[in-house]
Length: 137
Image (cartoon, rainbow, N blue to C red; front, top):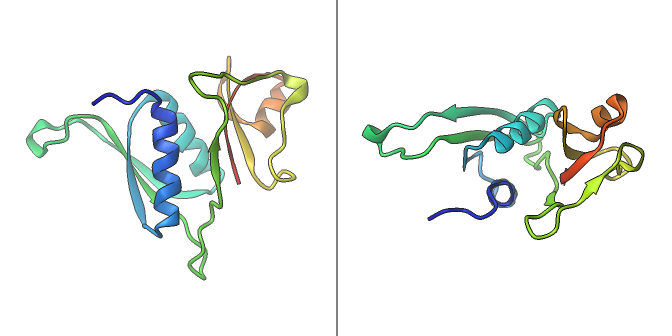
């Protein structure tokens, strides 16, 4: 079965895993998903991630990403929310002057620009706009 929106599917899996207090989650691999997960790792919303290559002998038919989720010492999730903004049916674009801040800069907006996928802080620094993919807080 093919997934219409792989970004939304990965975001939903991560959100549901945090809500269910799972320690890890596996999502399908794509270049954009890898970029988003890499940013989540750099912004310390997750502990680590690992790319699992395709292996028909182990019945892994697709490339996957294994994500270790991050919790505080009290057991609370570090990531409180993640929301998809730009969708396949309605793309949302922002220019460099109108990049939104997420929860008074305690969260981050993930933007797909011509210079790659980056958080709002870097997009403002490089003065580039692009597609407003999702916000994380």
